Amino acid sequence: MFDLLATAVDYTKWNIFLVVLLLVFGLFLILAGIFTAYFGSGKSRTIGVALLVVGLVVGLLVGYLYAVGDFGPKDGTLADLLIQSLLVIVAAVIGALVAIGIFLIAIMKS
Image 1: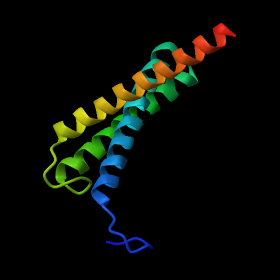
Image 2: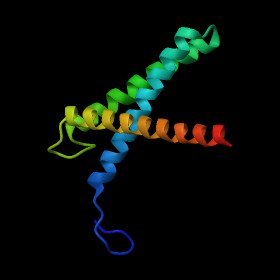
Image 3: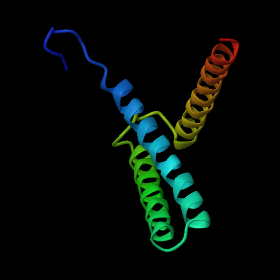
Image 4: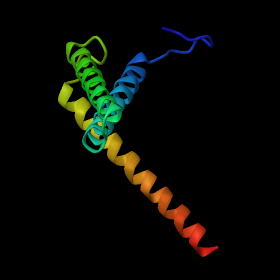
């Protein structure tokens, strides 16, 4: 497949990007749902349960589509995807913490 500039487009990388994005989205919906359902009351508890269910559905659906081969590379396994997703999350958290630390140091020094 070619894009508008007639250069080859590798859709496998975009599929993996989309899968990791959706898995991280689902994971954080699950975490937000658990937090909201546990600490909330009334409507917020119901919203927390809804977030939890939507996060589980997104995660399971993406995992299933990846494992079947419709959404990812034919030679990739679900375990590889989960490890890659967790590494992406860990890298993002470390990067965010370092950036926040630098920001706080800069603010405190001024």
